Length: 387
Image 1: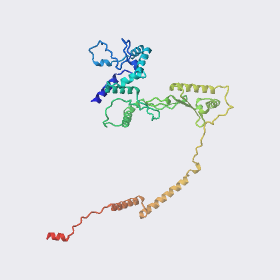
Image 2 (image 1 turned 90 degrees about the vertical axis):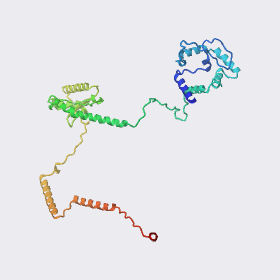
Image 3 (image 1 turned 120 degrees about the horizontal axis):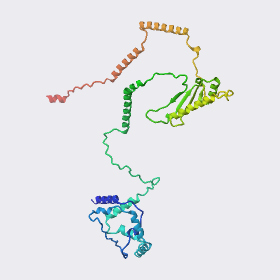
């Protein structure tokens, strides 16, 4: 029971204790503001009369109320004067101590009248304030990390699946939801269907957008435009100048100019920028001041890879096709004659016969000899017993 009482007192003191303040020497801790009289040097501690409290009916727990640290520090600073500390140090030296702090330390910690429980509580509190010593065996002298998760959770009863299994179930639920939409919602979109109308001659620009369903992606703002210079109804000189102005964006193999933009935040802004850029290119191509006829078209940016094709000379002629058909027909007639005479070997039938034979051999090897009970032998002793 003693250990229980010590633990209870330690918890009570630790819970009711105010935040830690700056360490004050023992001599300053015992000095009260405005002392009424000075006492001579003595080994017994000073006992102060408890001031009358207006709330006399309150319980003893009121003594553990919050401490006003600022007022306490101010009172201690006013009471601790250099003259008083010098007198106390002189009295302590006359009694065999180095200073008043040394005397108070010795008396408060090793006084025979102090209960062991109080001393252990004070030691525990002091140890908590100072903290544990650094572990010099570790690499950085780091202390062990305390438990940060103090939340009390219920004990796991092994009645639930793992988090990975829950994630798999969520994935299955999402797929089933999309399956329901495909069955019930997608057929309703047929009423919004429109017949395909090919672009007219005036619609020469082909726009391409990128969209991601259910999420925001930075690639959604990119817009691509394609057009053929021959569809702009320009003169041959203006068309060649437009190809030269496009530079590496012109593909000489497909004869299409391709440009893209993702400099702005929204698709509409990038589309507007590309539209203005195409207008500027057309206006520059129509400018008669400089037609760029003396500059050749640079196509070094596009590497044309030759694609080998099957030679026409190697193609099968009708005469060769007739020869192969006649040869195959002659082989089929010969096989039919051999099959009628029984000389044609059927590969499937041969494999089946071999497998049946192999299974019979394995069955014979796996057969276990049956145990036969032995008959008892007639001995001479047995005959005598029957006699």
